[in-house]
Amino acid sequence: MDVVVAGSHGLIGTALVADLLARGDSVRRLVRRGAKPSADDAGGAGGGVRQVPWDPRTGELDPAALEGADAVVNLAGAGIGDHRWTPAYKQTLLGSRTTTTSLLARTIARLDTPPVLVNASAIGAYGNRGDEVLTEASERGDDFLAGLVKAWEGATAPAAEAGARVVWLRNGLVLAPSGGALGKLLPLIRLGVGGPLGNGNQWWSWISLPDEVAAIRHVIGADVRGPVNSVAPEPATNRALTRALAQALHRPAAVSVPRFALQIALGQFAGDLVASQRVVPGVLSRTGFTWTHVTPQDAARWVVEAGGVSAPR
Image (cartoon, rainbow, N blue to C red; front, side, top):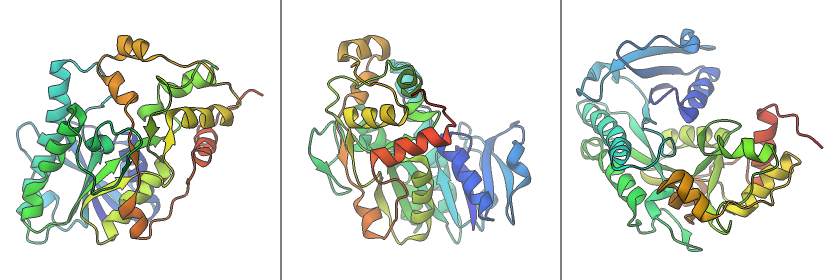
């Protein structure tokens, strides 16, 4: 398989490229001009990595760079939790997604044989919905993140209109030993001072990093299009997920972080952390996807083992 990856140096992109190379697939990394080759650019068993220059700001992407690819996986976008949501950073979040996605979609539309476009998205599409069970058919929310996702997914339209199969991979909370949403929470849990955020009753729909990578491979090959919820089959409350991580680390998780403290520290982003989204993976289940980590306890044990943590007892 020959896969083009945008955003290949992020948490998911790094794991995806490593997985593809280990399977003998070929990878084309889309990189900004002047980027230096990565250590893994020599390739893997039977496959290899080729760097392809592009510049979403100026609309620079040679269609030949995508010619012959089986899939384009777009993971590019500024980090949701990297900064406070000032008006300027909201524009960064929006532009970093719509500009890159639009350029890829327009370029794919110019190809005689367009590859499948797997475009990263988020369960933020559904907004804060309490205990409501959310499927791919559920209505969109009306908050900032829901609007961001709507514009992000909408930017894929040129590819779909040209006949390409387009998948919106609506990612939940991706659990990994470092980076991502757990990057700031895990160190606190290891110190024994981590606990539920807000009242802890909000639903956090999650997926482990290995299952996220496997889900990307799955939708490349499966006959699916449109929204696909990339989450585990068992959503958990924030309290239950935090407890599972703490138990895997043999640490307490009794100290709650009140909502007002989150708002002081994080601003509007705090609202996303205490939002409740009980999302289920209807499309993945229906098309025969198999998870490695089904329960929060499964994922928590993997996070600790993969991180090489020697937990105190």
